[in-house]
Image (cartoon, rainbow, N blue to C red):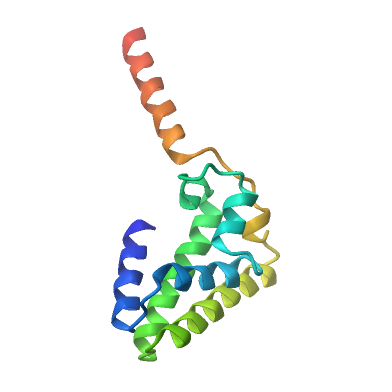
Length: 136
């Protein structure tokens, strides 16, 4: 997701977007049924410096990855320029991804279970491996 967000940021910059955070918010609003980044952060009960992406399961990550890749493609394909048009394009893509989830009978991203922080999971795995190696 980080790689694709970097690619999206580059496409957005080329589209003349100045406020990237605002642009990102529009994608979230579309995908999360009107919720802004700060609303999602609050709903997940995250600490101030915790990243939303670190608290997504694979289903939610996939929806966000699809949103990001399709927004980037749309900006390039349609040669969208300017903050307002780019924001609108990202909102539209987010809404389409949400609509697809709905049509498939899926759970809306804001209603998916919130997994532990990926960083905590990585720590647990590392500690488990260490313990296994000590037990041998």
